[in-house]
Each structure stands twice: as structure tokens, then as C-alpha cells.
Length: 131
Image (cartoon, rainbow, N blue to C red; front, side, top):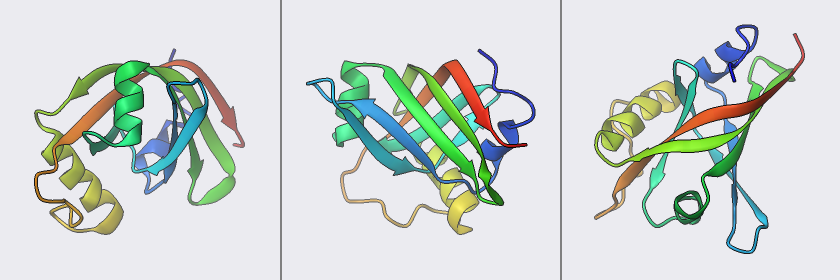
């Protein structure tokens, strides 16, 4: 499933996304996240052991919603699957996201012993709102 060219730019902006994962009991869990993309693949970064990390590793089904920061009536809603989970290179990904969102070269909130992890989300259903 392709993200429409009319809305893919939302992922390139300083747009805050909400990543929804599934708890073990099937209930939804939503977290605000920084987001980027690799082509049509949505990319999110977190740390190992967090709730969303545990959820994604148990059940790869996720949803991501992103609102255009320049027009709150324009949005992108994606349902998909985490097709890759990587720790290698994840520190560079979070540093790139820190540059995008905070204009700093190094992610400033890293915790001692923290292992960063990157999730690559392949869209299976895409909806858009606005023009």
C-alpha cells in the first residue's frame, strides 16, 4: 500500500505522530513519537524494554496517525505492520530525528545503558484527511 504523494510530505515535516500498538490483552496503547520515512516505509525509534517495544515484538500490527503541523485539518492515518526491528544504526536514527525535531546534533535524552531500537512500518491501509 502506497502513501499518497498528496500527503507523504507530512512525514517529512516536524510532525508529531501517535503510534498505536496492542497490549497483550488486545487493548490499544498509544504513544506520541517522532517519525520519519524511508521511501514508503514509516520509521519510528524508541528504546528497548519500553511498553511499545514489548508490544511490537509480540504483535507487529500497529497504527500511526500524523497531523500536518501547518494545517491541523490535513492528516495521514496508517495501519500497518512492523516489518523490521533494528538496534544497529538506531543511535544514528534517533540523532537524525533529534536534528529534525530539536535542531540538535545528538539526542539529548539518552539514558545510561539505553539501547535504541528502530521500527520499520510497512503500510497495509492508508487514509488521508484534507488537501
